[in-house]
Length: 328
Image (cartoon, rainbow, N blue to C red):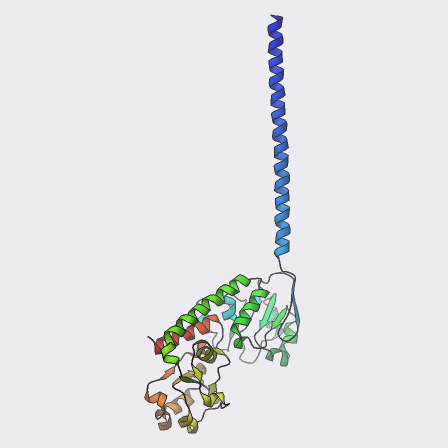
């Protein structure tokens, strides 16, 4: 009987010992897992810190140092709304000429308040009211007229020399400022694919052909060069040549020079209908009607809304128009 009790007690002790060792092992494993998780979390935090580019200091195109303490979320970029939208970002305000904003963007800018540039750049107070954390100015004129100095006191302010003349460069810079280099590359790649497809389709039409763009406003008729906007698209992107008359420096259009205009295709751009008087005068002119482009039905009226704007969306729509005009 005693022997049986002893054996029974020993069995119980062994079982308790085994259970205790199991619990100890589980505790050790749990502690190791906790430590491992903590290390992974710490490593993740450290990696996030290492990957963040902010605070970011970058020199703008007019030589000013621009420092962003954190990723900007409230951006004011008048006339560059098109480029911001390429990153999926809506600005806090959108440019307006006092009558209307950029209409071709309104499907993406619904609800974004307009700010008028009818009398020049808006006051610093009107900008400050919306509390931007980044201001982007599309050309150096803002420095020359003193606007930059006022705006730079509100928020970090980046100034381009002329963003409209360098779409690729300006998109890449926005990618730096927003820490979105991949989105910049994707946007540019998508646009380039559109350019390449259109250029291939138009190759037989553009080869050896010259174009002229005539812009009408309240002051008269003027040639647009191939340095920016739709002029850049037609020559640098799609393969047309610029009229030698325009290339040689003639920018104001008069009826008398039309017989000398060596343009196979002519595109007319009425700036906000301000040039109605002059475009009607042109159309009624016998000299105009005697030009080769007119006789061959190679004159096209365009939308000033995006033919006078730069950006991936605007230039993409210009390409769509040219395809519809010449290769429907």
